[in-house]
Amino acid sequence: MPRRFCQVQSVSRHVLVYTIPTKETKPILRSGSQFHSLPLRSCHKPPLQITRESLAPMNETVNPSDVPRSDNPVPFILPLFLFLLISTFYPSFADSIANSAGDPELTAEASSKTWTYLFMIGLQVVVASTLLIYFRKVYLEHFPIRFSPLSIVVGVVGVVLWIVVCDLKLEPTFWEAIGFNTDRPSFNPYTLDNTGARNLFLVSRFTVLAIVVPIIEELFVRGWLVRWIENPSWEHVGLTGLGMGALFAASIYGVVAHPSEAIAAFLWFGLVTWLMARTGNLWDCVVAHSVTNLLLGIYILKFEQWHLW
Image (tube, one colour):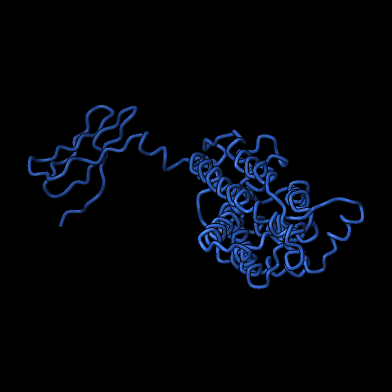
């Protein structure tokens, strides 16, 4: 059986052409500086051609900083900004809930505010969802969707931490002492006689609590804020190896955004920052946030802790 080996069919400046001779290939002839293999008419396949262009991707490593990403912060800021703006129009039910058993005037006032509150919740869902869908390509460009089971564990630990610390009621005592009101709407959905309205509120409230808020808040805090603090050219900054300023920024935001639960917020945002630094994945933070909020909502309904939402 003839020996098989690879012979150079032709050499040029840009193209190398190889053939593998067989017993059906004529002897190799040398002419000048080129080699020529003369295949017979019975050859079944054309010779493989390898060009510099085809070899280049095999020899090059893609640098993540070379991948184009949007440096526009608006998709990360605008959803949360509009959400918080709408929240400023929430009516307060704190006095009505506290006195509903003995003050009919306050109870009637609470009923007149109910539809305003439901409208604001629904508006937040619509506005935030519309913006998230519109900017979805920007988010996926920065953070492809993936998550780890650790995010669920952190979410469960987070809700226990939040409930235990809030139960101490340290923040309300402090804010009341300096005359600063940090009450949440504290709406009790079971005061609604209309079953349809009650169900509408619960669906809307849990959508906001467990889906909308985790996404828009994490996109703002960890998708943009901590990266921008680390480096104003933030679009190529990862979520691992950040400096202390960027890491503490998330907890400081939590205190500002949740003054009535400032201590719990500082600790909880720090816990999720640890998850971010460990996995380097924004969607792990979103899942942990969602799990915490979902379980917190169930706790609020079960034990009627309306001041927590």
